[in-house]
Image (cartoon, rainbow over all chains, first blue to last red; front, side):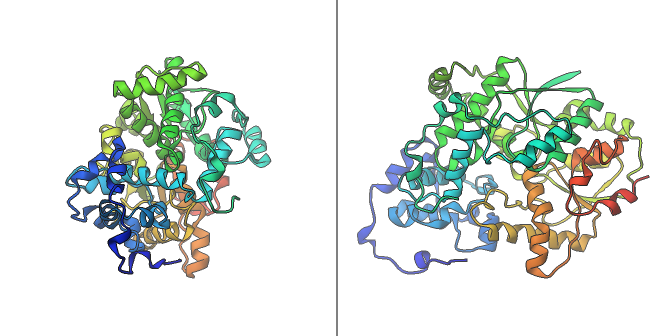
Length: 176
Length: 291
């Protein structure tokens, strides 16, 4: 795995953005972050941290509070959460780090840092109602098993509730 | 007879059709009426990555479709269960519900806040109950030693899942397994995540998580892993060969869905009713122990 030096090298605080923390906690789902006393219970309970120590919720929380805007939003690590919810289950301060991370990911996506796989999934939803492109073999298998057919069609009502603008700008990666 | 709107999600009806087959068979057998709603689409869970509001609107629209039919939702996927339950929790806030409904009005629907979401296993545990399951069994599973796997979103976040079980010490799937005569084994990595939601971004990270559980279960010499989410199945069942290839270890651990095990106990045909032929890891050894 590509271990970026991002989190291991000392970094000057001249470039920190003092408005970053306020920008993050202005989002309702992230306002709990103010209560974080950096105890590390989230990191201790994180299954991803256990197999890949560079992914560290406690460290990410501190980086937000220090104003490390660019380092956080451009970090590939913010996308490594397995969404198991252990961090919030363990937190003595009731910080829902999973939600904080989603706020960070949404901000990062607006700056073009989203992994292309998530952008592809939303594009498939627009075309088929599900996160995959349609496959003939699925349709045939369901027919053979007498299971109800999947709709798999482009639907106006789905398009109208997807609020993402300029979907292709969310990821700088090459699409599938 | 209880009645629910069946929420299939994206992955079960496409990549784990045996779960759908077995669930429909078991529900028919236990008189749980499942209604297919053609308007249902993706629950939205993965889209919190890009835009939380879009994800919430997707979940809310699905809730509104069930509500319009006057039905609660029955899910098969742990992640859909989590996403829809989290949306219900958020939409209890009047201001959020107003904001969301203003947007849902664009497509002519509204969510009033009346729908409940229950995963099939929860319906079996709470509506049917272990006693009735125990009385219904037709085959002897007493030779089977299996490892339960719950799935993170089946249990968490705790506030949204409302008393389904204790996230740190869950027991309901154990009880469902015991009720039909098989033995659920205790193992250290019971609560370890399958990695299914990180798999699309990093297969390597997911494989590390999967392998930890497979290593643990190899020591326990279980006949199968029994789970209740198709994403967990794809990780432990379908990625297992890949991990064997990379690590040089042999696991050969059958991974099956709880409704399949229940179907076997209730006398269903393993192929026609429960889709055991769709498993890449052979279940012959497992089925040969059933009498």
